[in-house]
Image (cartoon, rainbow, N blue to C red):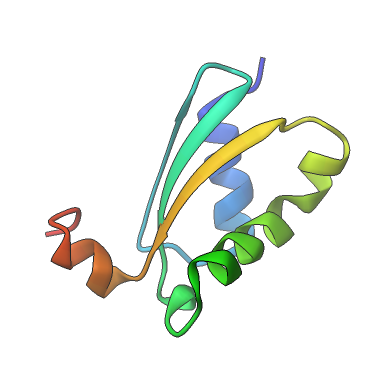
Length: 83
């Protein structure tokens, strides 16, 4: 069974994150990813960026499903998600 901490590690290895949290049941996961790398990107482009980091794990079906909320630091602060 896949551990959310492993997914966090994979994401951090390919994307600088100001905040990252992953929760899930071992098969389906949800991630909150806050990164300055998302500045100027659309919602779809942000998710594509994360998918590129995780591509190998999706292709080998190690990771089946990941729901993502991808925000810039300013957006996260505006929503009260960061201090």
